[in-house]
Amino acid sequence: MNLSKYIEVQGVEMVFDTKRGSFHALRDINLSIAKGEFVTLIGHSGCGKSTLLNLIAGLLNPSSGTLLCADREIKGPGPERGVVFQNHSLLPWLTCFDNVYLAVERVFAATESKQQLKDRTHAALALVGLSHAATKRPHEISGGMKQRVGIARALAMEPKVLLMDEPFGALDALTRAHLQDELLKIVAKTQSTVVMVTHDVDEAVLLADRIVMMTNGPAATIGEIVNVDIARPRERLALANDANYIACRQAVLEFLYRKQSHPVAEAA
Image (tube, rainbow, N blue to C red; front, side, top):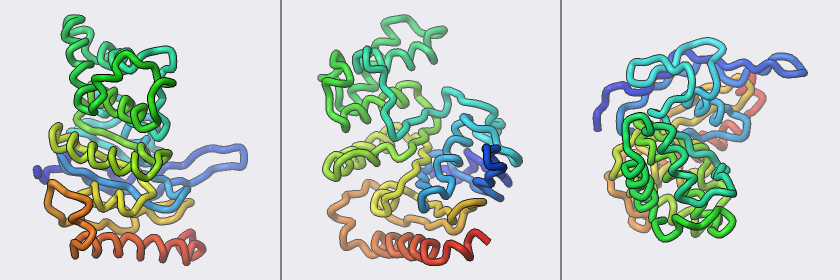
């Protein structure tokens, strides 16, 4: 893996103005992510995981501090950063193909022919195993398939960074496991840099190179970072008794339990 810094979060604070006054969501966030690295963000609800992801996506601007991607300041959304939300956000009146094509056209229309745009769309659907569903509309496919269309749409833009906000959180356990395995294969093929929000400890350890654990909000920050020293490719069944897997899982659970047990001390 290239260990050079690719995404940099430097001294970031995030304060929201609300009807009840200011809400300090994040404080003193410092994080460097290498090119090709898979990082998961985990913590209790309200700890600012999605806020941090949205800052990296450029959907929010920090109250203070700086965010960089490839040595350029992040000042808004960009095609080099693809986002997959928990809700697939597909347009219900469009087919799977057209939902992906819409993003492809937005990014590549100025430089590619219509046939090239179509080829790129078909390739993205094939990457997530949905070529057979290209002409179907969202109401005609399962929740897991909808989520894969969302992933295909993000990947079709050839983003250098893939940002995922609990993309499998609303799915049943079997579908979630299948898509986790598919994601591992896709990332191995595309070599994308990935930042993913999750509540699932096993998902975090299975997928990540590093797990960034957030303290409780308000004014949440990075509490600890666990390095997942497990070789790739990873097979979930083989990991069940893997000593490194068990140690990483235990470290995350202990951190989350400590933060849950002492919320007052953490907020102070």
